[in-house]
Amino acid sequence: MDDKIKGLFPITQAASACGLSRSTLMRMEEKGLLTPAYIAPKSGRRYYDNHNISRILQLQQFQSMGFNTEETVSYFTKGGDAAELLAILENKLNLLQRNVEELRIRAMTDSAMSVQMMTLPETVCCTRRCTLLTVQEKYDAMYNFFHECVENGYVLAQEPLFIVNERTDYLDGRISTDPYPLHICVPVQPESAPESAVRFPSCKALSVLFYGDYNRLDEAWLRLGREAKERGLVPAGLPRGIAIVAPYTGREIDPGKYCSRIVMPVAED
Image 1 (spheres, rainbow, N blue to C red):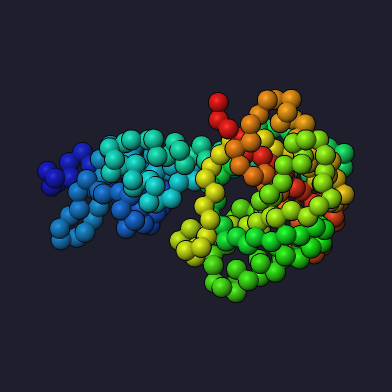
Image 2: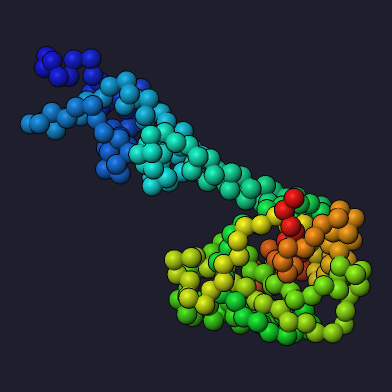
């Protein structure tokens, strides 16, 4: 036996120990995730040591957490610094918690309204400012701008459409009948965003989440203002209306199943 492979495992044995196929280990190597302890010069046979086996198990764990190849490679090249992976996982957890809350409210009765503090994710958007009054006018403007963004070839993000409202009436416990300016926001992937795109940084926010048609919109705004006052929160930006499930998400969706979130960015303590 060649002394160079003494104490090493052939690829079939290493793959078997990890519950994987030989081809899977080869793909890991192709992606730069794994380097065999020894490769025979003539035959090209791969051999692995205990460190390789342990690394493969870690790669499986990272994959189950949802990390991609680039993120995983970065962890190892940075000497095992997990700060970046932790930040990515916490962002995914935050998104999952938001999704759970949104699905929970949709599964409840039509009188349900959920109030909570949350963290809005950073979002890059194409925006258009306009002054509209009725819900139908706002919807038509959102639909048309969404269509325009697709025509322009922008790669859309998975975040829902939202409107930034230039209004403060809800903070005074009233709903004004006067039209006010608003910004229609269509989230896009940063790499495809035009120079005119606006970046909304991540921020802490007070949220009112509800489902049903838009007849309850004024009620949600008043609830948001009342909760902000009772909690002593200071606005740190214009409020947003986020269309989680709306007419644009599917013609077959019952209006009673629409899901909306009204949020107010707040100053950090």
